[in-house]
Image (cartoon, rainbow over all chains, first blue to last red; front, side, top):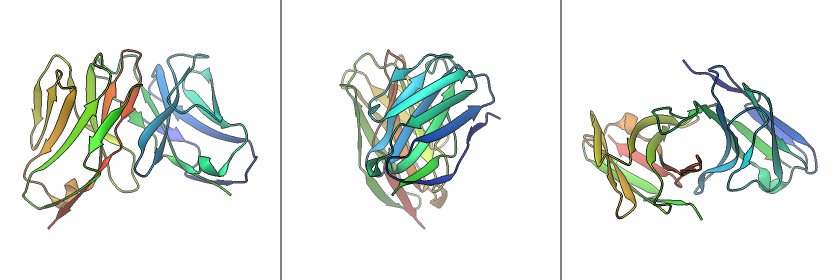
Length: 115
Length: 111
């Protein structure tokens, strides 16, 4: 069974702090994604990565950066946390082609509160 | 830009009735359309998907239809049960490999 593990379930940070959200998958998936989930807005893509050291902006990359130094790990970085970044953050992974019957596997999510 | 519109945002049905959730996508080149179910406090899980070369797919009580001309796809759940209560998300895969999600539908099945 695919396991996508997010390091924290709940996180509380102060405005201006640098925040790291870590995600690890154990299925040798090429693709990894970071989404944020907000009521009424669904899941919005922040960044995704197709390979090590590779990243592409999603729909809402502003205020975020990512790092993929190893295939199994994809980190989301909030350079200077702000209150509007309070949200549920979901990491996901998949094999190279979603089209070819490779579903997205999600982690349990990290609920981040910025005060 | 690329987006997926999902309706309704909430849906309440009686146990045994059918439920239909509809989505419209903007990128006509999208070729893969999965549906995810998210139970309260849990991660989204894939329940069914359809590719652009197919018009309909069924798996027991759930079915998905795709109208490529209208850029519209729908999820149909028949004989609903209380355990079907959850938030459902549709999504569309763009040629660039981005999976764009709809806003979600909160389905409530009343016993």
